[in-house]
Image (cartoon, rainbow, N blue to C red; front, top):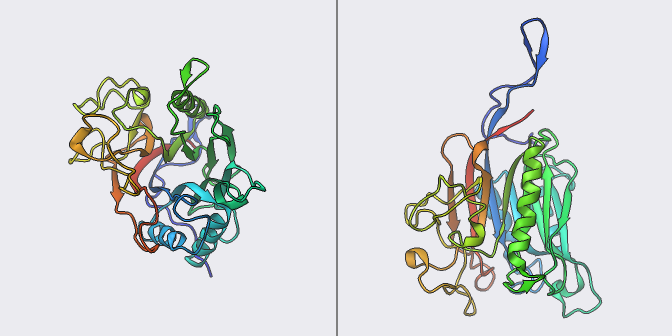
Length: 322
């Protein structure tokens, strides 16, 4: 018999309350704590679309070992997604597909030289608890094939809590007068603002293809983050590893040194480290108490490195409207 999904922190308040005179008021928010997990798995470039290289096994083991409540994956092929479902089933997660969602960045193509050898290729979400109806939002097209997306899903039991995943283009080209990566970041931020206006709390993970101190993330990070490595911020969010003592305002690197990748892409990188581009954001006003983040070493159980990205994890308590 499967155990019920686990919440890390008990609900602190729920239900409608009555004001004097019997007038109902909105229920107080609840506060719950979640472990979140993000990995760009390089499902095609380093695993050739295979579910048997060791990458899927490494992802499942890490999700379980890190007690992840939510997991976000980028660059995952459809067969790898289904294989990860099966492994999490075996680990005691809810049966069926009600705890995972997939959004294709590129659909199946007859040309087997394309990403994933003709299978859908995209991003995915997994949740320890049952999910509600997901939404996919197409981002501005970068002209490199496929359509980058934002994938968001509420919890079935907490419709005002949403978990999202995205993968921002690595292109820095101007399209229509503006850099395409800036356009995509703005589109994602616009959707998050819409969720906030609806009373939703959002946890988002993804490969943002931008280092925390880059100007294009200034309208993401809150001005309460004002350190030499990360200044001039005007946004509403905090990144769960931005208090990392080894690199305050940035956090630990999330990119490996595979096939020449992972070198510094600016002349004086903060903390003299490789890029941090895999990020976990939460709106600052929703955060209750301290939060933490971490970057894990890349698994080498794939006959070598399983990806050119590290797994990024975080723990945060958030207010949720009920």
